[in-house]
Length: 344
Image (cartoon, rainbow, N blue to C red; front, side):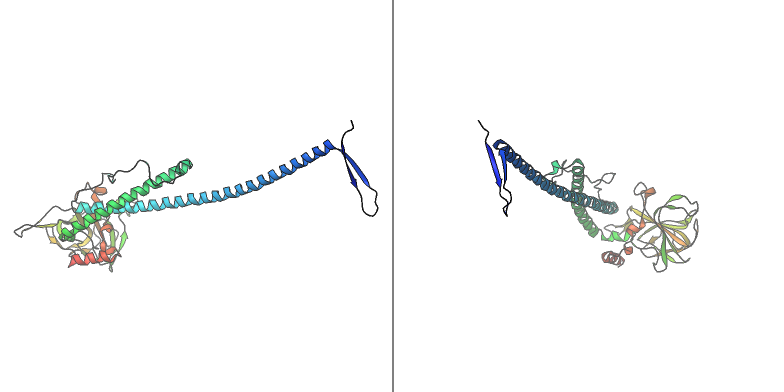
């Protein structure tokens, strides 16, 4: 039985020679299938190419978003470190004010606030569990630190409110806080800070227990708060020095005035002349001596220091930075008004 064939006849224009092509039907069907497969494969790979291009573009966009997110989280972490530092300073001021007013401390010996919290943060994103381990750790850390700052801020607001009430109830005691500069600021300038510095005599790093205020010999040195002179003598290192204990006054029902043990004392060293003696009661702004160059000194200046009377408190031997108490060193109008009100 003859095989089926399909004949193609091509008639060219202009009376050209007629061409005749014969193909077996099976071959034609096979060719059609191959052509269909080729077209299908080409369409599939074209679709996959465009899909991969779209996916690549999406991956690039997600990568950029991821980098921006990580950068933003790093910026947030830096901001948190700054805020935590500011909260630490507020906590330090809070504790010192509580010390002065003999209020109970609310922090342990390491300065930590005794509050509880959740083991796991509650404000994490819904897809937190699907994130990479590094991002989960970063987000968890940031969330817990933010939560701790929120609790700290709530506590600090309540604590300062309690301190404000205590200040109002003990307004007379404000005169015993060393809150002003010990010299006229138009006649002297700060020449050395509190803390570790290079000793001008030995060249070694040493602790400087106060601040140095340079000026001319004879500049008046004034008490920075009310108190009683504990010492007025010639010392080996500080030369002529005056030490004042700032012990608040207590007036009994009969009007008798006594002094209860205070918290702070101030020291005025390298004086050219001492104008008070041990046991004298002094008032804020009262002249207690004149600036000089006595003792271990490289030139006329005042060594001014503030320390706890209980040397176990504060930093090295109880000394603390005097600048933290100098309210007239602040640009805050409320601080200036406070100093002025205490002087009235």
